[in-house]
Length: 136
Image (cartoon, rainbow, N blue to C red; front, side, top):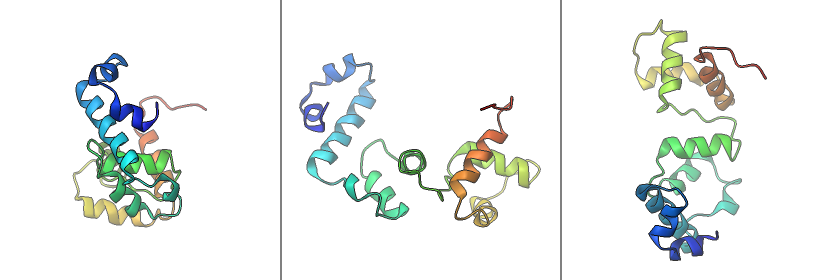
């Protein structure tokens, strides 16, 4: 569907696609942002990470973590550090602090040396928590 069709669609039609009421609201708001021109996907490749995040979090239902995942997995940005991610926090605590809780500031300092490849480091941190090693 085109964003204009989503904006015009009755909520029941979106719900019939398997969306919850809340997700239908979020999808409609996202479509409104596209239709209204407040999202600029053709510019995202040239925009820095924080500018893309600032644009995306205007949309209801998209927070910083979601925007960071979009940067990593859709825009393939190599240097995203999603410190709000509980898996990243847990892996840093396990591998660098013997499981002890530490501040986000301390975690950020640990991750500074991973730049400009913090997205890659994040992926390895997530994999390090897998109970069974993943084979590719």
